[in-house]
Image (cartoon, rainbow, N blue to C red; front, side, top):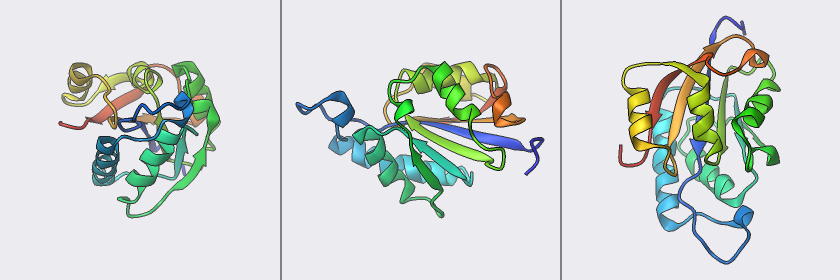
Length: 172
């Protein structure tokens, strides 16, 4: 594929987690989270983006979110469970995305706040329609996702190069 073709990045926050007496990394989804993850999966499938790669945090709640969401996809992308996503800063997430091979066009990243929200804000130099206003108004609740596009190689991904194409959150 040409680096001149627009690429898509979806930044997907895990669904609502429960608070049992376990470490933060081991927290599972709450019942509402399981329902929202499936709905978010349907909404992601409705975007029409064919994902080549999914990068998912190793935390239990992100793995469960992804497992439920991807069932709604017409085709399952290659999935890599990446421990560096857990508790990552926006800069660390950009560095991870910079490692993506250029034959990958569309990436879905399943992660955590505040990293995914901050990354969406940082990457989006522009926005289409009311996507930025909706994201700013709603924040980035559990199971929300932002769809960004940019042109260039993955190594060229940096603050401000993207366009916020869409945003969705439960109760949108």
